[in-house]
Amino acid sequence: MIQIDRRAAILDVLHQRKYDTMRNLAHEFGVSRQTIQKDITALSLDHPEIDVRSGRHQGGVFIKDGFRSDRRYLNPGEVELLERLRDRESGKDRQTLDGILRRFAI
Image 1 (tube, rainbow, N blue to C red):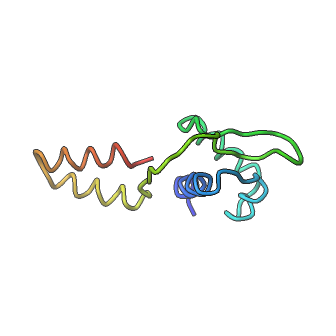
Image 2 (image 1 turned 30 degrees about the vertical axis):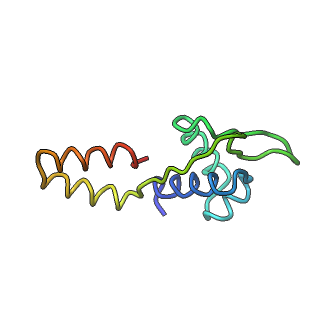
């Protein structure tokens, strides 16, 4: 799994579960804890709802209390397809595809 796909999947997992550990995420995605830490750091720049807490028993990656996201994101393959379709269009159809990409791409 490439980095951008993994980060999108991590974001989906966190929004669904509301909490997980770096260790579990690393195991689930088949990467090192350091890789997950880098992914979480990068994601948290654009997603302020991500809260990282340290501690052996109560640490982990959380979605902040009260945050609710029904937002879904496009994976890179979906973005690529929509960009190809957009390049073939003009006028209002092109503007519509641009709006979809802006709203749903990571």
